Amino acid sequence: MKIDVLLGLQWGDEGKGKIVDVLTPKYEIIARFQGGPNAGHTLEFNNIKHVLHTIPSGIFHEDKMNIIGNGVVIDPVILMNEIIEAEKVGANLRSNLYISRKAQLIMPSHRMLDKAYEEQKADNKIGSTLKGIGPAYTDKTARIAIRIGDIFLDDFILKYNSTKTHHNKIFKGYEFDGNNDDYEQKWFKAIEFLKEFQFIDSEKFINEALNEKRSILAEGAQGTLLDIDFGSYPFVTSSNTTSSGVCTGLGVSPHKIGAVLGICKAYCTRVGSGPFPTELHDEDGQTLRDNGNEYGSTTGRPRRCGWLDMVALKYSIMLNGVTKLIITKADVLSGFDTIKVAVGYKINGEVIDYMPYEMTDKLEPIYEELPGWKSDITNCKKIEDLPVELRNYIKYLEVQTGVKVKYLSVGPDRTQTIKIK
Image (cartoon, rainbow, N blue to C red; front, side, top):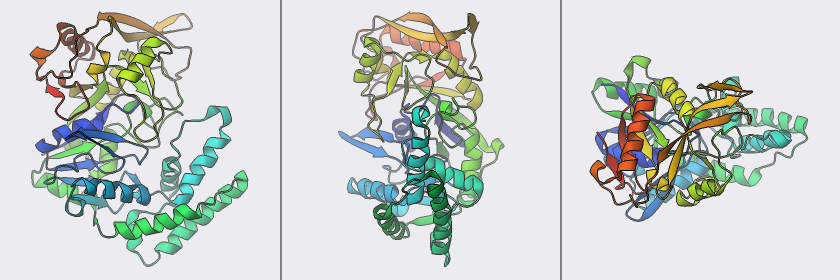
């Protein structure tokens, strides 16, 4: 038995939460392997909208195990509130949520450090969500972080104060007021709340489950183009969002990775700063934003919108070893006379078909145009129901990428998902 992987191929917000929810019945365990509460996975069913930030998106299926892996960074306050909201609609987190003892804690001072670092960047801001994710991962690498398993140790407060003292020295150097006492009180209250849940050595748990031939789906957060190594650096997140992150984020060896399901929107979006070659600043861009309700599920920020970038998509497929494609939000393209896809870039008079080392605003996309469709596809249930132009668009993506499309999403609800092959 191998662990399947589901991750985003763009700049995040591809609809991973919905697809994980749709696929969960096929698996026994859903495991989140990286990222923090800067991710927002939106699920819709029974006319109710749910937004998850840390909890895996299989949590609303009561007979499934959901694991927060060691590669995740956890803000106890956000996780506590998330649990409370999920329990209100019937999720049974007391029995089917498992938390890796090795997952790192986001401290109240990490949130303030995030703000301090972002303010120092002035006009070069990353566009951080200010949730403390970057500073938490920094401390992990610096080997001064505290892990959630430490909350059960006798010297937990000593560890906490030691790291906080280090942060206070940074605040002093920045001449920044790092006081966050109100949040700290909520934080310690949340720590006590979380002690009631199930903590595991996730690497042991997951490998034993594989040996028992139990099916597992690894759920990624953010998107490939935000990967700390391979994304549009420095406008990236602080973890490895690619399939390689599964090995370190859950503790499994590479040869135990099975299918890699890559998700991309039928167009592109991005939140925050950074290069975006196909970004539209015109009426078409606003139409995509309005039709797709493109506002961050975590931040509420309007997302930048643009046409599908095939160069970037091929790059992401290469990095992840994608075996099947999942296309989301195809319904958002309904109504366009023509649809554009970037197949190359032009820079300094040269045409290239790859992601350059330095992504700059000077990259000019080279487009191919395809016929659009006018009909509403949100009620389509099978491939034959789709307009021929959309079916041709799917075939075009398959030819360009060399990867078959497995699922197509035609709306936000879990029922609005078509299995292609």
